[in-house]
Structures are given as structure tokens and as C-alpha cells.
Length: 219
Image (tube, rainbow, N blue to C red; front, side, top):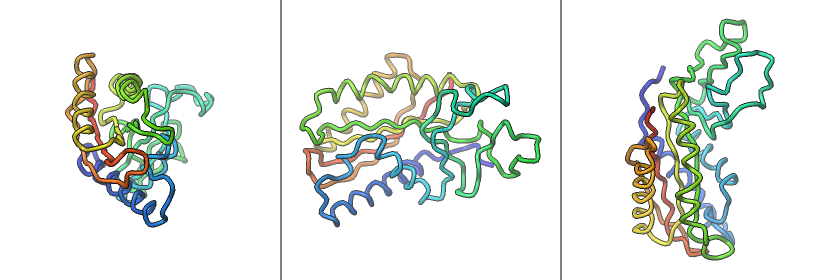
């Protein structure tokens, strides 16, 4: 059972997977690269990257506090987290409704031992040109996700995965730092990020992909 998670390994797994996808776009001479995709289109790539690193990947999982106390409550109800990780591709995530029943899986990882990951992607340049709301998108909506992760009493391991597509690395490094400082000023419980950067072919104005994971501390 895993109760300690190496965020460096998580970041490097995502970086390796996205780098491979970017290289595949180059080999195909695709019109657009990975920076031409929207956030939901990138999610399967991120999931596959983590699976390649042998994590168990469980997308769109309900937050523990939103899981039903009543067994008949519909599974579609409740807020959901983008990805929940277990330590191995063969390790399921525990289903509280099935605990102490014949349907309980013996090696399932408890919710409090899993790693809960919310994802945000922002591009400085899009297929329509310079993105006018780049700063707003970067600094505004993610506060809600951080609060959800930090407030849930059964989440002990969590992070905000920020994927940036920017003109150069200095812009990405500046913006990751600015994002962290803005969060801290707002009282959001984030720790300094682990970040990796790699070059991509400039099709839209973006020359760098950055993968930054900000651990979220419990409130």
C-alpha cells in the first residue's frame, strides 16, 4: 500500500508521454501539435502517459466527501476529480459501496492513500492567434480545484497539474512562479511546484511545453 508519493516521478511520466506525442505530431507532419488541442483532448494523452509509467489511472472519480452515504444514490451525482492514481496498473481504487461485501476487491487502494490530481492547461497562442485571456485563464479558475482538494477530509495526497504552452521557457518559469505567488497571497495551500520543460515545434507561436505539479496541502 502506498502512502507516500513521488511527485517528481509523476511529473516526469507526464513529460515523457507528452514529449512522445509531440514527436509523433512532427513525424506525421501534422498541421497542429499538442498545443493545438483543447484541455479535454489532452486528458487522454496525460492518462496514457501515466499508464505507461505503470500507475493505475482512474479518471473522473467522485471526491470522497461526495461519495454516497446512501447506496442507492446515483453514481452520476457529486463533484469529480480529473484523475486519481493508484500505485500500479493492476491496482483498483476502493469502492466504498462495495466494502465488506462479496464485491470488495482485495488489493484495492483506500481513497485516502490515492493521489488526487486536477488538471489545467493554458496556451499562450492558440489556433486563432495570441490568446487574449491567457493570464485570466492561468490565474482564475484553478482556485476552485485547489479548494476542493484541500477541503476534503479523506484526501491526503493531491496536486494541481498545470500544462503550459508558451513562446519560451523564461515565460513559462515566470508564469509558474507568478501563479504560485498569486495562490499564496489568496491563502491557497499550494507547495512549490516540480516542473519540467521541453521544446516543441513552433506552429502557433508556442515553442515550449511545461509540466508543473503543485502539491496541495491539507487545510
